[in-house]
Image (cartoon, rainbow, N blue to C red; front, side, top):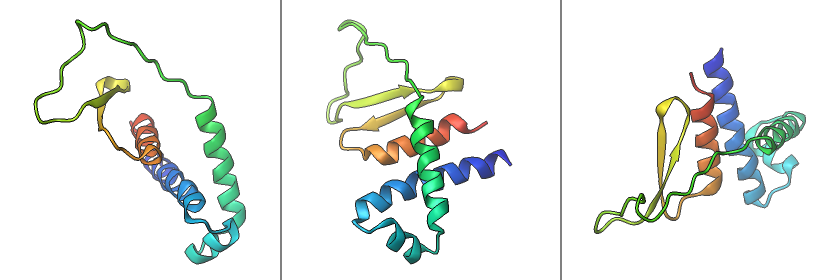
Amino acid sequence: MRQLRSELWTKWRELVPEQSQSGQTVKAFCQNRGLRESLFYDWKKRIREGEAGKFVDVRVMGPKAQARPLPGLSAAIEFRLSKGRSLLVEAGFDASHLRARLAMLETEL
């Protein structure tokens, strides 16, 4: 059950930004994908409300504690997640994709 809920959140976190980037109206987007408009708006609201209340703990490390990138590698950002997990993101990442993945990781068991 929990996995299904996580999969639904991931699916809709990808569909909502996809619709806005497509240039299509919500009606056309939903018709093309066989989705109900009312369901789309419901998930859009859930996602907006769910992301509005989340805060991320960010700590800035001093210059002595900062890791230096290895030669030939671009600078990356490391996100420390709950349960001892972390996510390394290279420059040029897609922000909406990152949000969806972070949400998925944070809601998993």
